Length: 406
Image (cartoon, rainbow, N blue to C red; front, top):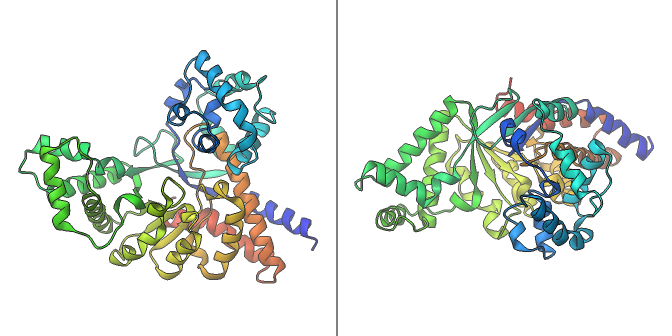
């Protein structure tokens, strides 16, 4: 079979597979309907970091422009940098969606205002379903924003642990329960909140590997840091305290059979985000299912061998497809050699605004999967039917099974 025919056949097979979008941060539809969009919403959340790296003013890193004057100023700041980032994988994914949905090939000085108008025209009830379900072929979205139960029945919610690891949350607990409240009291309180979240529809708890996955635990120091918050409520919690609370929550998840979704890789000081930190934690919690995000980019091999070596670890390719497509194509081809086929979740968009961006990311993900599986077929490792079987596992059956989506 000619290479182009093989890839066309694989793509046709993939396009027929229903998808579980295994990670998003999409706001509820009510927020979508009330947002005043502008071109910069297409830069959020990822292209903005490439722009910042290219020397965009920092003020646009943490908030978008509001009002016509700020939109114009923002474009003046972005325009000279756009040519430096538009060929990167974040921008390519977005531009692909821009072309598909609105017939626009690029963002320019002559159309950036028009793009805001086109985005505002999507503020219609049912828009998420139209794009995600009907256009993308997504059956379920695992979403980590806001409510545990979403208005859209195809969205499933999550409990995000990070706010409960803050000094503000711990100090508020002490203020409400008295200075005699202990660290273990606080852990029992958060565990009860997780159980309540599950009762109200949450299907996972979100962790960050930089916040709570270090060994050995130092309970004595954690208690001392908690006690310090009683007299210094504005101070940030120490690392030992966050690690102890996170570890206690993992134990709570084992009791209620709820997966732990763990961010790894990419952000900030990537050394703190390495999946290597999980090697000392996963064996201590054999009853917890770990859904490890983003393939730990750039620590993809360290991440891959977590799933190879531990039966309770699954690898989630969410976001990774557009972070570094070439890296992920190679990683997928390598994982097929050493990771069992039931251990991978094949796609997650990981977006905040504009569901059309999820469509763009899904196309990139499918391109990556086609290329990696075509390589294996051409090497004689598998045939097209075997590839289709594994692709269905990755894109649908594995996350649907682990998260009991019916």
